[in-house]
Image (cartoon, rainbow, N blue to C red; front, top):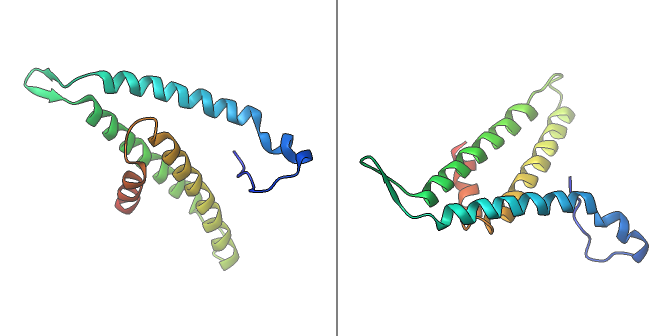
Length: 129
């Protein structure tokens, strides 16, 4: 997982915060998504029988579906309590917050590359869950 880069940083700590391997994987994945999206967005509406298929709408619907699936899995996997104590509850909520913030940041980041309104979709789908 990528750590947030502080506003001020000592030169000696720069290599530690560079996270080269993580940034490379992120850049490679972003490139793959960008190339795929570019191809989809270049396509035009098509008729398949009597049904009109809009590739951009199809891409957006698929992204929404995957976002809902990922958030639901995070909620289901995190919100399991064994002791029922308040400190366990707080710990689980902090863990969930960390996971959801990571999803939100990733979604906002990738939304620029797929030409969608990421924050709007995030809020709509999260409120729907």
